[in-house]
Length: 366
Image (cartoon, rainbow, N blue to C red; front, side):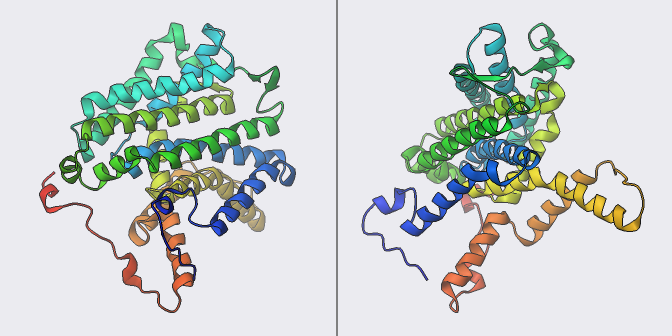
């Protein structure tokens, strides 16, 4: 069993708990760098898709997992970041290295504008408001046809960085590394936000708005900043999705994407960076796992492969139900319990992870 003795405040804000943990993450980073030489182009594309979903999941996790604000409209911010990135390149002639962060900033500004009128909403009412915004953005894309090309959509141009042309199909290895670099930078940004007073304000708002106000936290400001950061990170993921898809329109970022994004972080584990990656692995690998299983079953039975409409959505929903009933903490929560069991054996007790009420007596009627 490893025991970490905290002798200074630095122990609470360090990036890693101890050197062994830093070593494991270093090995993981090395594996991610070497992945293009370990798998073929198809699975490299799936890994790239997984990283993009993980970036989007981290964006939503800042809002839902860290600040406790429900959102069913983050597909709107994916669309804002995607369209802004491409339009900055096509209309203003900006290079990708400028249009990409500007697309994220545009989505962040949209998030702040959404947070201003919805700052006083809670729970279901906030979810409904963000849901309406997602539907509104879908309609605005269609109505703004002279700019967005309506339902016909836009083509994402190849990425050009310092004269090097990067395309998902032309050179998928370079595109993977671009996405990997963005994912690592977002992880570092996310982790450092949690170590700041702002990150602690997010946690205070999540746990109890009444107590947060009593401690001097400006709840409305914390929510607005959280919305902005969340939408900005999600916008970066949307920009990468546009380049990954090649062509996109309003249907690319429909309501189902918002719901899938929320379910993804719930399955992965709310409130942790790991949860965003575990959920992204499920989203990226599930379609391929279903296809491989279907081909194996039909091959064993000697019949032709049959595509069942809605099978992927049904299985994803069944996985969500299983986790809600048996493991509300998600995949990462289960991993923490397994790890703790081996660290504390034979002193591990199930009551260590007994579910607690998430509200105070003063907030029961909200």
